[in-house]
Length: 322
Ligand SMILES: *Cc1c(COP(=O)(O)O)cnc(C)c1O
Image (cartoon, rainbow, N blue to C red; front, side, top):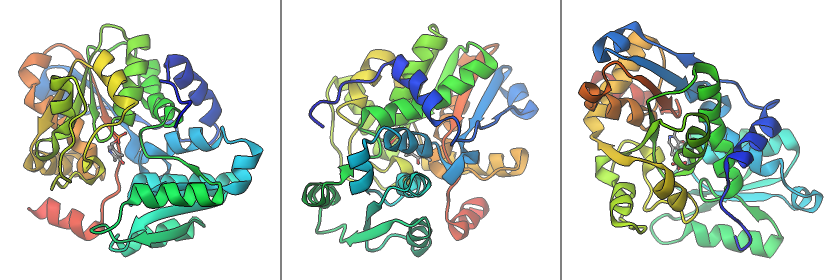
């Protein structure tokens, strides 16, 4: 990661052009119930309808499409058990690039099977005694593979920024944008697009209260590391934001908000019942925060990014009946 510089809006625009034939232009949905409840206009950008079921496919595709011939031949490696793993697996399959995914031994069998189905090789590790970053780095160095992390990479950030770009291009300028925050790839990319396409838009990143490292980092002005948080928002179960994402967030984001896990469950129920769609817990962060700020949002135009819809079906049933 030596020569990697911070991405700009130009990189987001280039990413949009590069990936457009591969990604879904996801729908922007509205709900009369929500608009009435808020007394505002609310636009949901639905990346749960993206390929793989989450926005991460955009960043993965944007990164792999910039591989040199030698990099393509040697392959890609990443460490993730979630949506980034599937995204790297599918985009490498589409582009004919060999892929190795470092996954915890106890990752859900369904996720491992799906990753294998896309043709990726899986290297298992013990999440209690081994470091996935270390294993990923070793594989990359030993076999000449390129490591693509899930958020802290300029091409990944630029790819994720295309979500908000599409949103602003479809609905015009907004007063507020709510974005889920894990490592910050989606938030940093969204902020680049918002600053360019809707300069007066307030941008809020949203984290689970149980894992508010991003909020602490934002307020302290330096990256704060926490223990692996115990939250149902597994896409935000990270110990810190990224070295590249953080400065972009610091410069462009207005604040980082937090929500409780119960509020995520309430949003999942709302999305299922009223909008007829499956949203994973992490994908509910933005809406949950907006609901808490309702009084401030009257008469405004609000964008909410729904980041993904991948949730284990038996867990989903538990959430809905909780
Ligand atoms: C990865 C992920 C996030 C968090 O994205 P970052 O770029 O790491 O901040 C949010 N929601 C879903 C569904 C994800 O897969």
